[in-house]
Length: 385
Image (cartoon, rainbow, N blue to C red; front, side, top):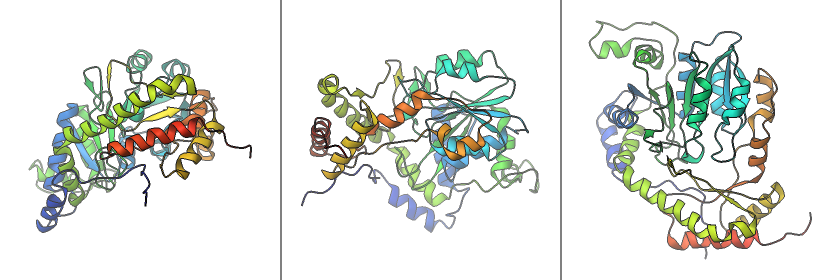
């Protein structure tokens, strides 16, 4: 019996199971353990961050960054319309009005030209997303923000760990950067995340908010003789049993990234000869970017064609899928928006984008089957519904 080619399949790649057992047997599987410390050191070193705080999810890391902004009534935060809800939700939850920005069609990151039209005295932060692990137009965004020095840049880097913009690691570009270790990401622990602090001045307060509003970290470091309630905060810490699984994956990051690069390159090479005749746009990686190889996507000519290809591929046992629905047009997006905007590129891309199966251990036969199934589906016309 022929089995489906799964869209995603998390894999054990190193000493994950050994480390999980060690964390459990060590008697401290909760947050604040040795494995979390070691994982945080790897992440902070890669980005050159002042500190990395291991969190229960990327959503939690975004919420912690929003708390650190001390948002006030009337403040707004600019976020891309084409992203996951957490990118916007974290700031709306802290009372900010949301201003949605369109994306540019080359990398599907925030469009600097549209961003420039949205900036005003109410904007406290701009959140960027490196879609598919490809850096957005960082130069263009920096040029816009140069005129607004008090506006904080936040990176939602859920897709981009170990990618780079030129020689700058993704995650090092903003005052804050957030990471995801959800089971769909390159490096996983089931559910997990991290907040990278790139300004040393944020470290002390971030530690307090991270530790339920207490100065526990200062106590653990011997800076105070007891710890007490100091500020607002929440329970953000990643359980050490999950950090143990993650650390094992981070230790073999070169192996994992090489596997994912192979999948990306296979799709790119196999589809390139057919793209023009099919009217398909392939995923684009500018020459000055080092991609993180989080996914591979294509853009079909229009929504109906995309939906037909998805249906045919799924019927053939290949689990392709679509992606984000534009936030600016959603019910919650309209409710939390500070003002109404149009994001036509986000709307267009959302209707045409198709993601191919992408995980570490797809075989040559799997990849050949995905490509063949896609090409057949893209040349098949379904009867009118």
